[in-house]
Length: 187
Image 1: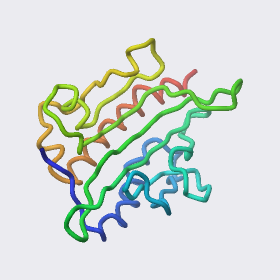
Image 2 (image 1 turned 135 degrees about the vertical axis):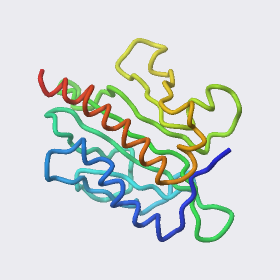
Image 3 (image 1 turned 60 degrees about the vertical axis):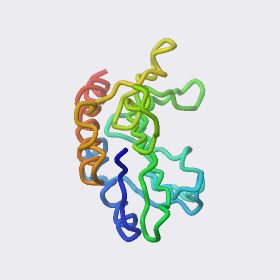
Image 4 (image 1 turned 90 degrees about the horizontal axis):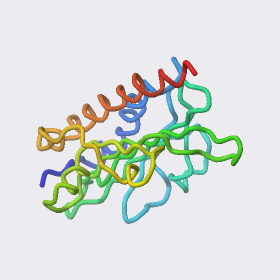
């Protein structure tokens, strides 16, 4: 299985790469805030995008506004230390798109773009999860649990480097912008 590995110093520059990756979702000229969380989760360092609010203790509670009023996003990456010093493996990269629910003062998930490159196994479901894949969240059960892979035919290439996985995620983010957010903007 291919794994996306980076050096420790690259982990810290990853923050600016994530800001560029998420730029299509933001209002023009307003980059998203992004930082490495202070605490590890599941033995991993977590990089999380946010609206500029601190403290960065709870990555799963951090969201940022998109260019569409009432539509929020959440992005985080888990980086697991390697056996060798100074290297990290990408454990997961998750983008969740939420619509603001004013009745419950909470968020309802619309769609998710996930990538679990370190997912081990040879079943089709494991392969579907390793590369970038969509979940349609605002749908009847069992559809939110389904994995719709985006790069199944070139999974080895996509998982070969941080550059390749970032490129693939960027293309999927552009699809979310064009096919989802642009349509919500007109409602």
